[in-house]
Length: 338
Image (tube, rainbow, N blue to C red; front, side):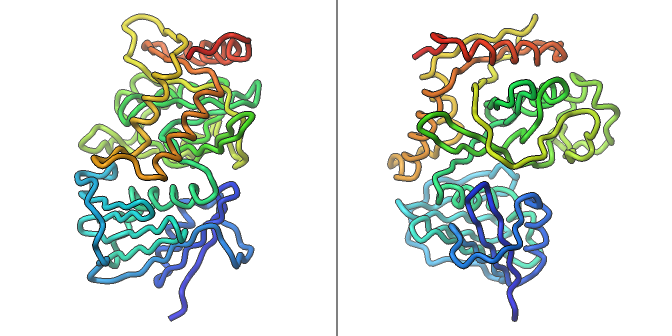
């Protein structure tokens, strides 16, 4: 049987995927259309092989480091060593990543695309990025149109990233992503870019941003629904390029304000703790080497740019101007806190 294949270029991280069923490649093309490359590469930076099987399995032998509900809703388990990671997704399959050899194998049941195109695909994408020194960041990424510089908006899931990102993209900013950003460390200044993915909009977001219009009555049990970026054409600015942008500032979303908005400098130690808590895998036995590299990259990023905390009120139309003012102040000397 001839295998189907696709090459994805994640801003310099060349990621080749082969599968024994073309449906997997079709779904990857839909998910990462802007990153597809047609040129042949004999030595990609990372390779993934996807196999369909009715009995997914792996060799075992790694310690269990996490078990519970994955962000995509499926139950799963993670097994890890210094150079390897395994994700079991109940009812779907298993993903085995060899970080040292820069390759991965996914064995999933026929038709179990929803089990793969969630936590599993993001985990292996992160591995492909790390193969070239990039790091995925759970943050919204926006470009200030006036200066061409980028801002990251950080907070754990459910904390308001999408609402804040939409408010900014409606006035003065271009949205790269509301959830999945990538960091390119640099000795002079870090650069960032984002994975454009459908937004997950909450009922409360629709209430706070009436310009979204009337959304379909198809809310899930969490009061959320997916909203494709193309469905927001004319209402927000979406960044169309895939080039990395210089990072100017990082904003952490704090508790909501009962009055007006408040934006204040945040000590860098507090920002680093917040980002690491949401992005670095802390295991009972300590940090594996790749987690240490990720932490060090985040520490360097935080040290290089100003950091702020936002306590947003309900009048979100006034928030973009305040964020822009904070980014302007970030270019002034003496604005960083330890």
